[in-house]
Image (tube, rainbow, N blue to C red; front, top):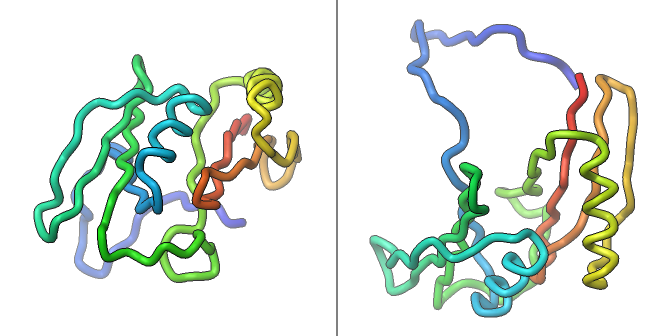
Amino acid sequence: MTTATESSSSLGAVPAVAGISHIGLTVRDIVASEAWYGEVLGLVRAFVEPHRTGDGYAVVMTRPGTGLFVGLDHHPGASRERFSPLQTGLDHVALHVAAREDLDEWISHLDALGIEHGGVHETAEPAPHALVLLRDPDGIPIELFWFGG
């Protein structure tokens, strides 16, 4: 893994961004996904938004008190195949946790719900970090990620 220290562009200065606003995930069963994201990650429905094109919609969920927004997208013509990180596009979603100890609390929470996970994976290279990997109902990998560097 390399660390970027400055932005470069052949066109000069790149306009500023402040971070990621939200993420939209296409799901197979929007009702089941909304229930899972609510129970497992503590997200609540913020609103429902029709897609600008087509006849789909998104259930936009948030974690109260944070800037986290996740849109669960329903596309009537979408494939109903389980997610694969081997397809071009999304590989995984990583959610930041503030302290390493938070991951232990997440393990207890996930265990109490019977949610499969990979335990805590911790390493010092290339910088101290730890994560817990779980998958949503569609198989989308979600990392609960602590960065200590």
